[in-house]
Every structure is written in C-alpha cells, then in structure tokens.
Amino acid sequence: MIKVIKVKNYDEVSDKAFEIMHDLVVSKPNAVLGLATGSSPVGLYQRMIKDHQENGTSYKDVITFNLDEYVGLEKSHPESYYLFMHRNLFDGLDVKEENIHIPSSEGDLTANCDSYNQALSQYQIDLQILGIGSNGHIGFNEPGTSFDSVTHIVDLKESTIKDNARFFDDDISKVPTKAITMGISNVMAAKQILLVASGANKANAIQATVMGVVTENVPASILQEHPNVIIIIDEAAGSSLVKEKK
Ligand code: GLP
Image 1 (cartoon, protein in one colour):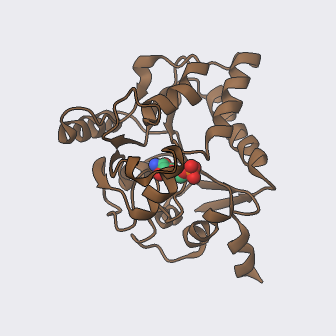
Image 2 (cartoon, helix red, strand yellow):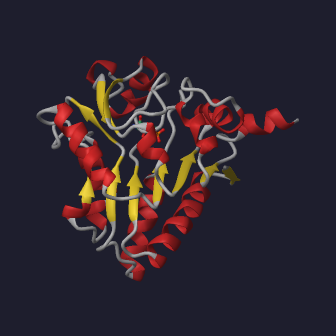
Image 3 (cartoon, protein in one colour):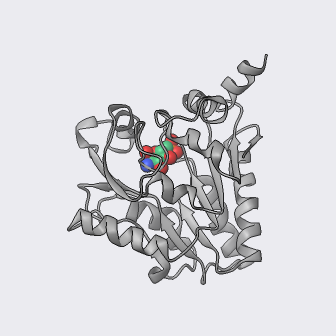
C-alpha cells in the first residue's frame, strides 16, 4: 500500500523524510537502513547530520546497505557512489565503517553481486530510502528489469545516462554505461520503503508509480504491492496526480 504525502517544496520533502528516519533511529538504534544516492535524498542526509551534530542522535549501531554503484569508476572517483555517500552522509555521522555496505564494482562483478546478496540475506532492511529515475527506475533497476531480480549488473538506459550527465560536466561520454544494483526483490524485502521525489521531471514517473498498472516497464510501480510504502513529493513532482483527479 502506498501512502502519498504531498508537501510544498523540496525542503519540506526533506523535513518530512527526516522525521520518519529520526523516529526509526531513536526507537531502534540498531536499525538497518537501505540508502540511496542521487540528489533527492541529500536534504534528508543534511538533516541527519545536523541532528547528529546538534542533538547527538547516534548511528553507531546502525547498519547500512546502499542500492547501487557505477561500474567503471574507481571508489576514489568523485562521482562514485562510495564517495558520494561518504561526502554527503557517512563522514558527518558516527556510522561504523564496518557497518556500511555499498555494492563494489571493483574486481569480479559476479562474485560481488553474490556476496552482496549474501550480506543482504542476513538482515531485513527496516527503512529503505529510494529516489526515482525520470523513467521510473529505482536503484539502477531500469524499465524491463524482472521484479524477481536480486543484485545484478545492468546496462544503463540512454535516458538515465542523459539524466546523470549533469554530474559529469554535462558530457554523456563521461557517464558510465553500466552499474551494479540491488534488485527489485531485495528492495521489496524491506519492512518499510520511503521514496522521495521533487521537481516536474519526476511527475510522470510518480503518476505511473502511484496510479498506473503494475508493470516491469515502470519498475517503481511494484511498490503498489508492498505493504508499507510512503512517497513524499513536492507540488511539482505531484502535478500529474492532481491533473488525473480533476
Ligand atoms: C540515479 C540513482 C537512483 C536515483 C536516481 C534519481 O540513477 N541510481 O537511485 O533515484 O538517480 O536521481 P536524482 O535524485 O538525482 O533525481
């Protein structure tokens, strides 16, 4: 079941998402968090860091699993998701490095997928944070990915490469064409899922996710079949939902 919370702007999306995250970590200090990259969760991450620094909310017993990583970028590349997560979240919190899991795209990729699935199988994610691609992807599960998928290697769609070029000097030739991502069934195994989206370029994907048919062509549409999903959107990302109701 999807509960949609519509707020005014990106700041309010981040405030609301932080409330949910904060309640969880306070009530369950050893929570297992599923984390996402992209610009959408950055406001949430900033609030987590501010609250940790000002109020001492601790993440020392939290375990984290990230959704995905580019293939072809070393960990030390500024746009690797490894560095993104350290820069935007982990460096500002007291999460223990050994409790951080991020799929590795270095070395044997098949072995990396297997070991990530193995690590995931030892836990249940309490709260999975998601952004959404403009084509409805979650993690890097592009349209057409099987709902039964587990961690795997993907070829990124043209639209995703274009969307993400803004992080690579707007040069699509610099954007990796492959990634390693948690599969859709890994995501669906979480107890609760929190998807955040803002901006008009997400409006169609949000509309298809919330009101469309459940189809592998819109990976996020599977969320309709999860028992506990909250989608927090701003007015622009929710604009197609409004149109539909009129
Ligand atoms: C990338 C990530 C996704 C993310 C999406 C949207 O493709 N792999 O996990 O949800 O981008 O990014 P943004 O939040 O920057 O719009």
